[in-house]
Figure 1 (cartoon, rainbow, N blue to C red):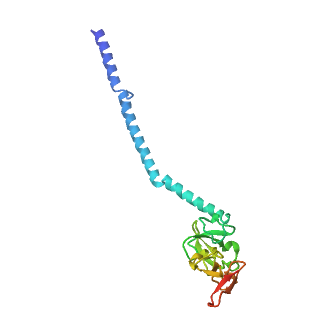
Figure 2 (figure 1 turned 135 degrees about the vertical axis):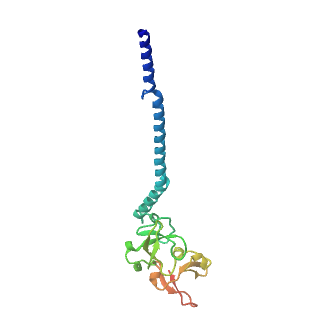
Figure 3 (figure 1 turned 90 degrees about the vertical axis):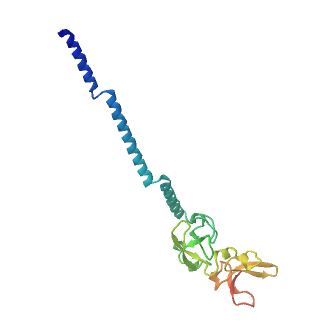
Length: 213
């Protein structure tokens, strides 16, 4: 009788121990599932915070813009365009020049001498007037601009024309001869005229002075 009961009791004890073993498969599966879910949620929350705080596209664009502006300042005057030429950036313009926005009587961007690099604007004919204007790349600079005429009219100086409208603001279509009409500029003295020309009264019906060559 005792020999039969002993194996039965041993089997019952083994079953009870297996059911309550903290290392059993059912307990591990539940724990692993909960941990995985919590970890994924935490990762998503961090990613969302980072995306909101510093969007990659906006950050990259800001850095690129700042670098382009800084590079244009460093390369100012490294181009070949003469003063009063239309430009997109300062590095398009020739030595000692920058590209200024909304210049000289009409909308647009033009190359102009930087007063900080050429000294006194009054000696840079016909760009003898110092004026602070916005730079194409941001900021501003004091540049030398025409005192009476505009960049458009300086650019048309000595070009053929049919009416004053061909010569830009501040320009005038003058009959240099009976067969030749050319653009000239209004002036007060020789310094208002491009190098090689003089400021004179043209004709007998007016006292207005214009640049003659």
